[in-house]
Image (cartoon, rainbow over all chains, first blue to last red):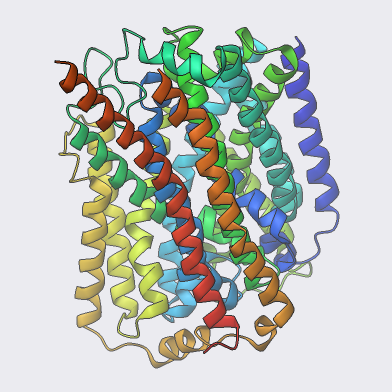
Length: 537
Length: 46
């Protein structure tokens, strides 16, 4: 009852924030990119909140619980560094272009409304699938907590995130994302910290985990390699998996529309860079707690099934009421924050990237700058997603992973080449995006849903990435680059005078130098929670 | 037998230390790259 009340209260809070933020929306720029006035805190909050969903708090915590906490910590630095590398290589140029959506950026870079529409379609299909997965995940969580049927929880969840996204667009999404970011980061650190302490502290917990018979080798870097719980045949296989996935997720964090689009809202490029750095460091600290705490849940119950529900089980059965409530609200927040970002991006792409290409003419300018049309499309899109989610069988992690990785393959090569090469043409960009998307869709689909087994080094996403690159090369070889596209690219490489401010530079430099004490803190945290306990066990 | 166990334990501890260093050094290296890029792009160091 208390869990239900707290979750309901948090929903009302998000709705209230959305309605208040929505009253200030006047133009399409306000609705799409929050007027490009967002400070570092809001951009960071939205970056992390859009990325972390039930996949992290249920799927990855479950993976740590299954016996791979340290292997996840091998993957995470690669994944998280995508924030900084992404903003340096792509995000700050995207911000400089002043596009309203990422597909618009591609369209302008290659002088092609067709490419903009194609990128918009990939957004609708890819993020649409991801939104379905996240909505399913959130509905399963809420139906379990509130003890209501899935069919009731689903429209409830949908209504909450659709309502505040509909009213407020990006300003509300930024605000609610940041509130949710604080809720789930606090929940993750406090909840997992408490679990480790109540298991006897890091030393005793490590000793007991080392002796756990069902999951031998759980605290070694490669995780469990023997017995029924083993998911890898050898340490080398586990390492290749972690590095491959780390690079894939690094690319997703760097270029995917639900991450890179956050930089479009930053008030300047320095804000975008500071946000990328802060997001990376926050993720690294949070994951130390999530993974080691996820493993420690075994000491209270080694048989939670499915393992994805381990953190929820701990919140309801081990944690004190206050922290337990915070964890449940935090997990719901992680799901809602991703869902609201996804829905807004789909709505924006339909109205701004796809619809103009279908109209084949210039529509009369709307008196409200297109905000009303955007809201109507957002609602219609949301209704379609609700319908599909009702009939699709629940497969939260499978669909979520499938959808997220599509963008690494189809957008990765184009995003980087669009900034650094004059040779890529409109046709090359379309070939690359379409071939990467189609091959990733087919291969990843066969692996996730068709039972196809690929060697761990031949991840479908990496293969699709190569195919996409080939598509770019072949397409570009058959056409001359558009001079306007080259001029646009070169203009993007010119640093605007306003960004050369000494004050801004000093502030960004201080942030970056702050990474040194943060790295020391991370090392200290891991020595305290992992190295010393393992050495003593 | 004892030597073999000690060797195994030492390898285990070296790997654990490697994870700790890797986890701290990757963000440090990335931030250092960012620092250089930012100073060159937005500062007067060109």
